[in-house]
Image (cartoon, rainbow, N blue to C red; front, side):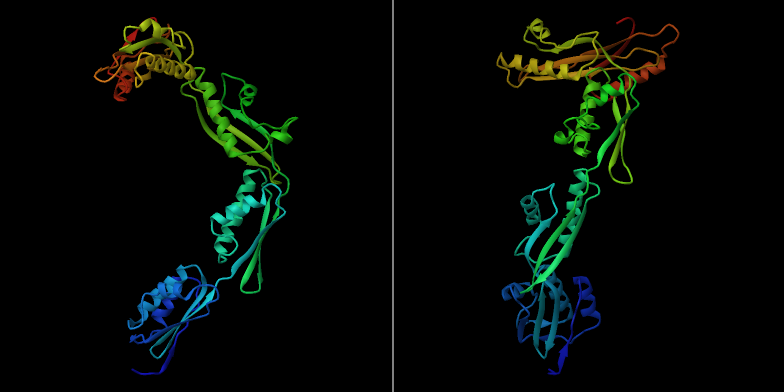
Length: 404
């Protein structure tokens, strides 16, 4: 074999680029490896490098294996530069290690505890003793900014400084300028008709500030708090018969100076539903009167989800008193809508008293009143009944016209 000195060098920031250079530019003739040497190590163990190489002494070496070796070594995350030199039948692996993080510090951060921030960085691999990774530092900087935004500090700035020190180490410093928190200037609810805006806004934990806002921070916007307030709003409507209530959208606008926030909530209330009757379906152990006394919602009242849930729980607990620990109690809601009629709802309770009892929902009857100046169209009514039927919620669906 020709002993002519052959040398190729690859400087790259990615394994893919390294592969291209090795394969296309610095091609070498295949040869049998007599020896492999590693140079440039400071903290990494030679065994780590050898274990990552896709060849051993005595193997045939070629460009493809060289490319694979470079990809593997970069994949360790320990090196910022890898070179392969071929001297006759000896392969020299020259590496330049990434600097090690000596210290991580936070300057100017008052909103967060330093130890908590360091713990968060430790979890992503950016901590003392680990190789410094610029991508992890960038990720940490962006995440820190996001956390400040969650605290309504929209003007917060974070600057990352990397300071090299002796023995190929670096100090990492995050300098924070927090600024003043943005505060909620206004909350608007659009689309409400049944209840005043002031009543609905009073349900929210978020507000525009008050005497104790310095302590409760209720005037600081938080998406988590807003979502919780929207759930309270839904429950408020659902417990007053508005089964079709929905939040269409929310807009959060911040002023150009990043100090004032306006929240707009767009809602659709829908129709109000009244309970026309409550029926017990299934096996109630010949104790229907006892169970009827546990019903928390009555005919003529607006539908109330909380009371239905309370009734279901009371039924389950009462069955337990008779040894039926696994009784199945369900609340079924039957409602049909048609033009020019008053919408009502029926809550149906079903029980499977135990193994072997076959219980089905019987006929659910919908009572409606047609107004004097409107006529109920048979085709529309039939379509509404079919809509209920195809939902497979009931064994049979019937439709009657008359007084409830």
